[in-house]
Length: 129
Image (cartoon, rainbow, N blue to C red; front, top):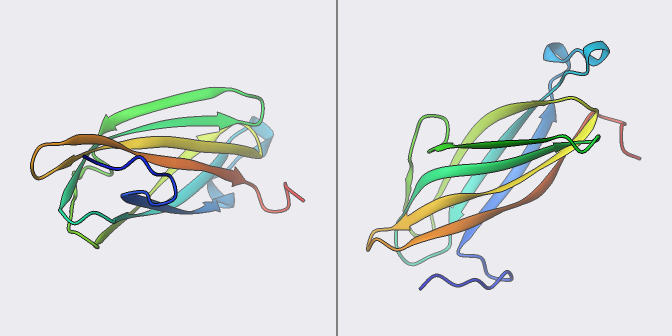
């Protein structure tokens, strides 16, 4: 059974974000962000990422929900102690927003579980003090 202990998550998700100025259009409420994610398997067995779910909220409270198979066209298998990284992006209508969600994962013995993606901030530089 996969542990639900928040102090020792079986799957660690680290995120770095970047505002993409050249693709954004603030006059039309279009703010483009990239995010780079590293997923680390803290279990003693391999896991496979099957699907993802995102809640993307902008500064006005508008919510986008995104679900789909895999990430960036892949369903990576991550070895014990190993990691998998990918980059993607999103567009929101305000200078500041947030993302959170989960990955649906499966162990080699067929156990399914959700790996939470903690909330992280999307912000235009100097938008937050």
